[in-house]
Length: 229
Image 1: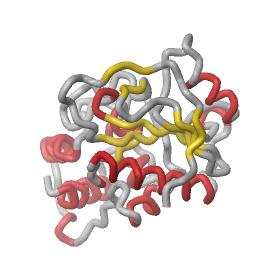
Image 2 (image 1 turned 60 degrees about the horizontal axis):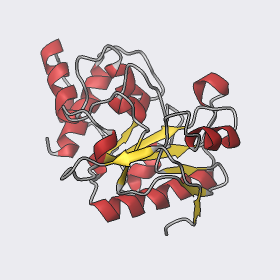
Image 3 (image 1 turned 90 degrees about the vertical axis):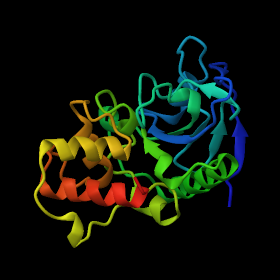
Image 4 (image 1 turned 30 degrees about the vertical axis):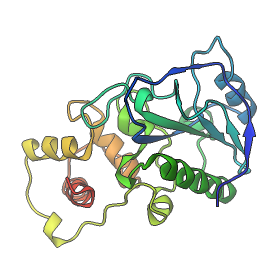
């Protein structure tokens, strides 16, 4: 069921590139002390930032930018070897103070609304589960949102994003070349210094080491297999 949408227009948007489809859904947290502060910034012409939607902690969804316009949410970012993530994505901000202002779990009402909104957006644009990404996935050296407390497994059970489940075939030795190849096949920028931390923040939130260990590599192998890549 799609959530109720409250209009809260932002002036911060521009045209999408001609002929470029919407193929990504990028999830963020607001990372500001309050929802009011986040909404004000997203709608302030001086800020130069926006998103298509914001989901408050009580489940209220605010619409800022029409989906046929490019919102300014991802910044310098790449996915699947291509830049201009803003030009080919829908951006959803999720109210949470973030790591700087008191990071906390995302309430059930908020996750219900996120799930409904994601389903609706994916349906309108034919976005695959594999192309629902975190801000930290597309900009791993700059961003860490929506972070390790975000309920990605719940969304994956609803067909929104993927949650890899390694099997025996995913175990075994590895080397740096395989790790880089797996990261690239999964969509990441393998050259980004913090890319493994981004992978762990999303798929192994209990151990954020930034190191390519056997568990992380098994997760990447399972993820690539689930993506069919």
